[in-house]
Length: 225
Image (cartoon, rainbow, N blue to C red):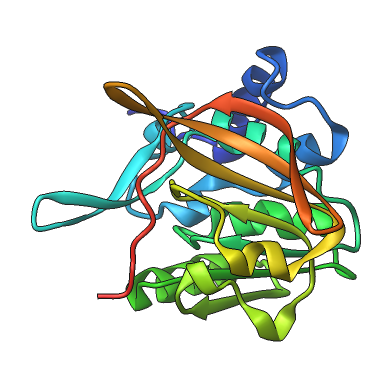
């Protein structure tokens, strides 16, 4: 009889790899990955697949991939770039499965707050269900146009975008506090090809200054309609 897989042990192995390979570098990001179990956010996926360091496709629409659970290594890298702190107010654009929002909520703690916005009502409902199943509280899951941010909970200490964008939306800049940080997968044109880089900006006055950049690959942001 096959031995039943232990998600806690599988998660420990995954996080150990992410630490060893340098994707996780801070205690707060490591603690979040150790505390939040990925399988709660991928309930239909076998455990031995969930805890590989790879992206997992979750939705396809008419043959086109529309959503995935990002590779844990790039999630960790972007969270390190974001550098969110305990007690901060964070906006996430792209709810996905809810896994990244759960990691963020663990980082900012019970006195902090996370808002995650997605344009697809199905993804919003799934993220809410997964967060509930994982016992995560304090995340507002909003159905809306991510390009507009979410003004009711602004201003934000940190904003993170989890889908590829060709530019910084004005709303993200406006809703970010001075001294805050924005992280997004930015599409770059390197003729004749396009590439992406997870780019971290720090807001100083009315300007955004690049503070970090690393290669990545994300699905494009979806527009209304």
